[in-house]
Length: 379
Image 1 (cartoon, rainbow, N blue to C red):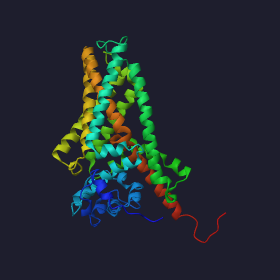
Image 2: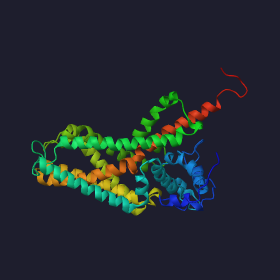
Image 3: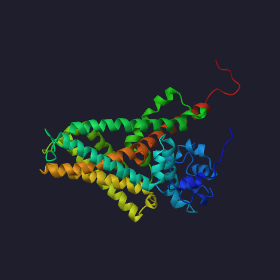
Image 4: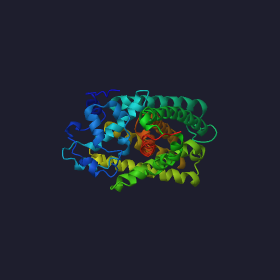
C-alpha cells in the first residue's frame, strides 16, 4: 500500500498546541538527551518527522507520544527552539481525538469555547435536575438520613449509572487505540500468550507511573503521582463507600481519613500546577493549552467545594451544606462527562496501555528476529 502524505497535518496539530514544528531540522539532539528514547522507539525525532511529512496513518499508529513524559530536556536542548516536548504533548491530544469515535475529543481540544459551553450546559442541567429531585423527595434543611435533600442512595445509583455509560465510551476508545497501534498491522500482532505475559506492565505503570519516576527530573513525577493517586482514592471512596462518606455529622475516620488525604493531595498538586503555569517556572509549563487551564480549574473547583460541603455538614449547617453539595455536583458531572472519556483523564488509561503495547511490540519484534532461520523447513 502506498504511503500518503497529508500537507495539512502540521496545521491541524497546531490547533492541538504544536509549537514551531517546521523549525525542526532533525539534528537529533532531542533524541540524544531523552532518557527513554531507545530502539525501537526513537523519539521525539521520529514522531516529529512523521508530522512534518504529513504521515497521518503513521502518526495514528505511533505509541511514542505516550512514552514521552515531557520532562522538557528535549526542548531545552533544541538549537532551533522547535519545542519537541510541547509537540509531543499536542500529539497526545490529537491521538486522544483519533481514538474517540464520537468526535467529542476533537471538538473539546480544538475549541476552548465549545468545551466551556459544554461545561456550563451540563452544570446547569445537573443543578436543575438535582434541585428538582431533591425538593421532591426531601427537605433542603436535611443533609443525611430520612428526608435528606440528596440521599446518598440516590447519588450512589446516579454515580454507578454515569460510570457505566462513561466507562463504555472509554472502553470503546481504548479498543480503537489497540486496533490502530496493535491490531491492524500484521507486524505488531501479538499472541494471546504474549498479552497475558505482559499484563503486569499495564497495572504497574497505571499505579506507579514507574517510567516517569526514572526521569532525571523527579519533581514532575512526584506531583503527577500524588495527583493521580489522590484522584483515584477519591473516586474509589465515592463509588464504593459513598453512604459512609456522606453519613454524619460524626466523622468516620475509617473512610474520612483517606478522603482528607486525597483532598489535601488534590488541592496541593493542582495549586502547584497552576502556580507553575502562571510563572512558567519549568519547561513543561512554558506553554499551556486552553484545555490545561480548564482542567485544572475544574479540578480545583470540585476539590474545594467538596471539602467545603463536608465541613459545613460536620459543623452543623445542613442547609448551607446542601447548597454547597449541589454546587459541587454541578462541577463533578461536567468534569467526569467531558474529561474521563474524551479529554485529560483519558490519558490515565492511554498512557499505561501504551506502555503495555510497547512491551508487546518489543516481544513481537524479538520473536520475529529469533524465529526460524531463512531456508529451513518447519512442521
